[in-house]
Length: 78
Image (cartoon, rainbow, N blue to C red; front, side, top):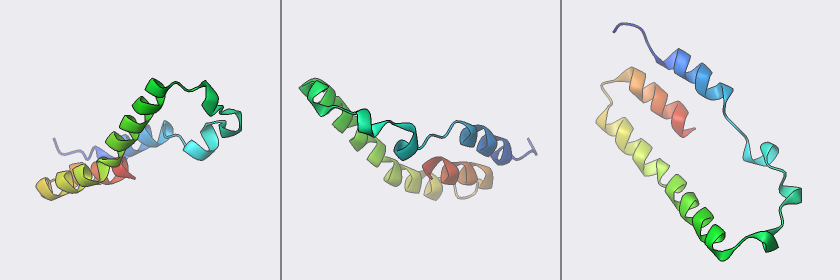
């Protein structure tokens, strides 16, 4: 395969990117409606998302020979 995937992947991923600040109606959020189980699930998901930094570093380190994949990972992490 001689075609770079990065430009098309970038376009398709950016088209569906969302913004937590703008896309979530935080002014309507009522924490009293949240169960303890939901709060725990949200916390675990946040911890999982936080692990994206070391995972991205590992992917970039281990695939430094693959410029297309490295470009994709850079955008994915951003």
